[in-house]
Image (cartoon, rainbow, N blue to C red; front, top):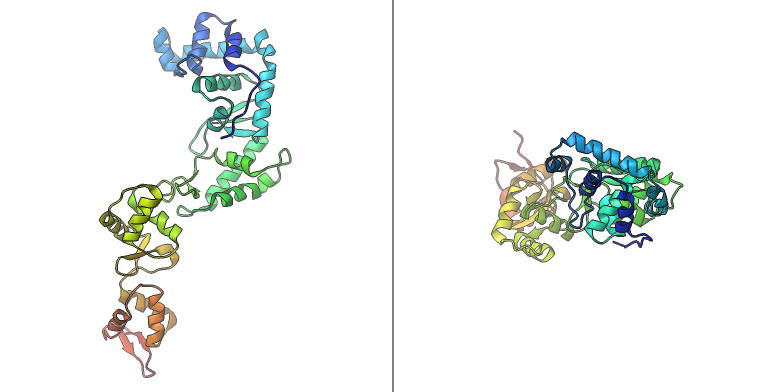
Amino acid sequence: MAKISVNFKPKQTTKKLLKHLQDRAQQVVINRFGLNDDGEQMTLEAIGQKYGITRERVRQIENFALNAIKKSESFHEAEEIFVELKKIISDLGGVVAERDLLPMVASDQVTQNHVGFFLTLGDDFTEAKEDHTFKKRWVINQSIADRVHKALVDIHSELTENDLISENEIIDRIMCHDGICEITTYSVDNGMAKRWLSISKALSSNKLGEWGRASSPNVKTRGVKDYSYLVMRRHGSPMHFREVATAINKTFNKNVHIATTHNELIKDDRFVLVGRGVYALKEWGYKTGIVRDVITDILKVEGPMTKEDIIDKVMKERYLKKNTILVNLQNPKYFTKTKDGLYDVVKK
């Protein structure tokens, strides 16, 4: 993440801003924002227990202290700092996740806390709190923020639970969204769109850099079956379970057992056994069931067929020996031969 040089010294500025406060008010602000050398941010309840007062009283002291700072001469003297921070957020797109912003302007946690304190004080900055959809973020342009939020929500709704798309594609979707295209305040580029994407908690990427719903097992991988899906999807064609295990080890540096891989593939309906130990993804169009079921489904769709055509169709669904298909066709309980020498399903 690129660093941004600032023209002020955060700790010295904070010292000037706090100097007019009484001791308890100073300590409440210092503890709430983690302005001590240890950088620990305390809750209202923890501070209340420390001073033997209620959490509501702590809140009142904090609000009084912040308002007092804003009315002080030191606050007006620090105006250039707020102007600089506003420009930084503007250059980043008008809305930016706190976890992206603070590391850009400060390398250590304590200094980041001081910058967060300035953002809370500044009238130009709106704190959008974290919820189930978005991370905590700082806004200087609410209209832009609303457009970004809508774009991210719309993209999430367009994806199914199993969809995966490349980072380039999801960035393109953001940049091509109607609301984003109408933005004239900024010249939207890939970097800006990527930072907006990082605001979302509902969209995320897996370990292969593919994006989808954060709740998807294809993104939030949990064990061998999910790793198997990702390596097979990347491979693009059926794989033997031994190949899958090897690919997991190589791609994710996970030491998985071959037998475990086989067992997980058998149990998960995302995979179809198409040959002896060979699996394909169901989403590729492979059908589940034994060889007889595959032949039956083909004949029901295509109608009576020659032996050669049946073999050709089945071989596209299963990795089998031709003789296995022929043996199944000879079962009179399920298949019959017409007067024209074609094979059909026995009518029941």
